[in-house]
Each structure stands twice: as C-alpha cells, then as structure tokens.
Image (cartoon, rainbow, N blue to C red):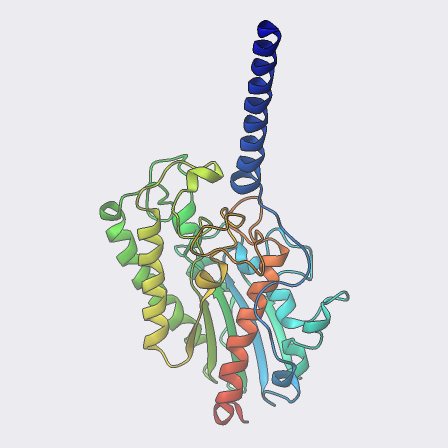
Length: 317
C-alpha cells in the first residue's frame, strides 16, 4: 500500500513538473518570442474635417527622400507610408477614406527619390542629386527619413565605422554623430535651394525596435551597450535641426513606435500599448510592416495638416 502511494506521488510530482515546464515554455513563447502583427488600422486618429477643403491652390511637388522607410521596403505597392500619403488604396480603412494629399491639393506632382539601404552619407549624392531646382511657382513638400541605417548597419557583422556604426561605443561614435549634424544641415539647405518658391520639410526621427530596452540581442543581433545612447544622440540632432528652421517640421515616429517593437507582447513594460499590443516592424527589424506604414502615414499627414492649415498665408498664390 505504501509502495503504491509512493509511486503515485512520484507520478503526480513528475506530472506537475512537466506541466510547469510546458507552462514556462508557453509563457516564454507568448511573451518573449511571439511578435503578433495584428490586423486592421494602426496609429493615430486623423479627423475627416482636416480634408474637407483645399489646403492650397499652388502647384505642389511632393518629394520622398532618404532610406528604405520612405522607399517603402517590405510594403506592397500602394501601401507604403509615402504611397498612402498621396492616395488611398482601393481597400482603405473606412476611418481613413479620403484622408490623403490628392484630396486637398489638386495640383499635386509626386516623386520618390528614396533608396533602400542608403545612409545619410549618400543622400546628397544619390537622392538630392536627382532633384532639380524647381520653378518659383512650385511649392515643395518633402518627406525624409535619414540616419537609421547609419546606426543599424552592418548589424555587428563588421567593425563599427561611420555610416555603419552598429556596436560602437558612444565615445567612438562621437565624431560620427557630430558629422551627422553637419550633413543633416547640409541636406536641409540643399533641399531648400531646390525650391526657390518655398517648401515644407517633414523630417522624421529614428525609432527604436527594442521599445526603449536596448536589448537588440533578443532580435538576434549582437549585444550593444551604447545603442540607445547613440539613437538618442541622433534624435537630439534631428530635433535641433528641425527647431532651427521655420520650414522644417519634426515627425516624431520614435515615440509613436514605442510599444510596438520586439517587446510588444510584454504587458509589464513601460511602453506596453494595451489598445494595440502588436508588432509594427518588418522581418528585417529596420523597416515597418504594413501596419507600421499605416501608422507612419498618419503621423506625416497630421503634421502636414497642422502646418498647411495653420499657414495658409504662406501657401497662397
């Protein structure tokens, strides 16, 4: 009798231990490995009232400049943030129907000169080199993402260098950060020179796929102790450059994407988003997925609406 009882207890204990292991494995998968993408609309609410009347009667050239985020890497044609700024796709979400630039700017031309894989070191030579000086009757609207590839390339596979600084210490990166500030000022000046009739420049900062934790190794990249500090340094420069010019407007994608990176499912994190606890990044970690692009176009649209509707005197013929 005692022997049977002892065997039974051992089986119970083994069963409980097995259950704990299975529970732990399931919890680890759900909260650490699983990155649910979700479905449907993503990001800020955009009021229909902003698109009920024309923003300007001037001829406007919309230009995309910079890296793969503006080039739309990973999105189907028509579903990148830049494409959706221009026009709504056929299966647009009801809440965004009619919220696009072609609705409020009748004389709108478009060119996207962004190039996937490019860094801030190449944007003057590659993107801006193809943008001609425009007639004085043309007003420029420029959307630009730059600097992100400077930071994440070459994913720790090579020694850090300027333009591919992944793994660098903050001390090592200091001269490269200072050079980025000079380059960005030059890029903004060159854009302005292309539009003697005036322009608005919408400059995005850089998001953080680690949701402010700084553990890129959880996404399969090498450990990088100073990664967050270098992102913060770049973002301070982007903010300062935008603040110094009256026609340059910061688009804060860094704040908007916190809680939608590799820790999106972890409810205990400071940036957990209970209303949309989903992953907004593409498989390569450095670009958005289509829900992320939806969120991006809303941020750009809201910033553009704010500036256009608040500065009508600047945009009159």
